[in-house]
Image 1 (cartoon, rainbow, N blue to C red):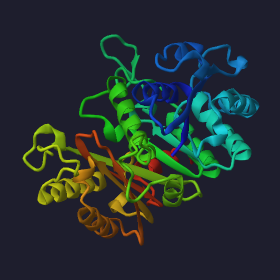
Image 2 (image 1 turned 180 degrees about the vertical axis):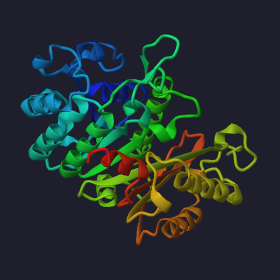
Image 3 (image 1 turned 180 degrees about the horizontal axis):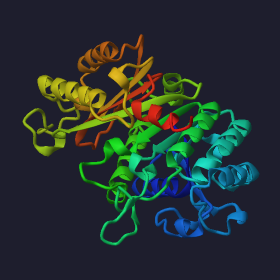
Image 4 (image 1 turned 30 degrees about the vertical axis):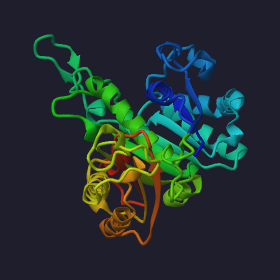
Length: 381
C-alpha cells in the first residue's frame, strides 16, 4: 500500500528519519515528513532532506515545548492547515493511508497530532493511523535526591525527566482515538532490557518500531514482477483488520533464516539450467512457516495483547516463494483463529525472491485494554 508517514515532535522525527534511512526507496513509502517546534531537533535529523523537515509554531521561538501539552494543542490547532499544505509536493492525495508517529508523553508531537489527524481526514478520503510511543514509568516517577551530590536525580538515570508524561499520554490517547481510524501503541517499557535506560535503548527501540511499520505496511508491495502474491494484501485488508473506530491494534513480527534456492542447498538448485522453480523440502518449509507464525503471535508485540485475544486478526507470511508452502499457511491461519478467538482471519502473502528469511506479521485489533495503557489512563483522576 502507498503510505505517507509524518513524524511529529522529537520522537516521531527520529523514527521518520530512521525510516527514511532504511526504507527511503521502498515502494510502499509514498511520502515522509518530520514536523516539530524544535529547530535543533530537526537539524539533528540526517536522512530526511531539508524539504521534508518543517518547523512550525513561531510562538515556540524555535525551541521545544518542554512537555507543555496545552501550549502544543494550541499550536497544533493553529498550524494544522499549514502542515497539510507543507506535504503538497509529495502528492498526498495518492496515499492510501497516513501514519502519524509520535511520542505520546511529549509536547509538540502529542499536541499537534489530533489536529493534524482531523485536518488530513477532512482533506482526504483516506484512513489516518497513529503509532504512539508510550512513556516509561521512570519518566514520570518522582525525582529523588542523590545522597552524595545532594541534587535531584531521576530514577532512570539518564532517562528524560518528564513529570507530566503519563498525563499527556492519557489525554493524547483519548484525543487520537476520536480522530484516527486505529492506534498502534508501542510500549517502550516492555521493550527495555534489564538495567537498560530509555536513553541507552533509543536507537534499538526506534529500529524495532521501523521494522514493525515496514513489515505491516510494506508487505503488499514488491518491485519484482515475478513475485506476484497468491493472496494480495492491500490497503483495504489493513483497513478491515483494524477498523475505523480508533481502537488499539498490536503488531507481532517474527523471522527465521532459510537457505535461498540459489545458495547451493540440496533441496533444488536448478543445477542443469532449468527454468522451473527450485523445490524446497516440504517438511522444512512447513516447520519454518509454523515457527514464524507462532513466534509472531506469541512473541513480544508492539503492545501487550491480554490473553492474546482479538476481535480481528490479519496474518501476512512472506519470504522466498519456494518456501511459501500453501498448506502450511492455511494450517497457520486455522491455528491463529483458535489462538486469538477471531471469527475470521484476513491474510496475505509477500513473496521475496531474493530474501533469506521466512517472516510472519500478526496484526490484532479490537483487543482488551493493555495493562500499561490502563495505567496511563488512570493517571488522570
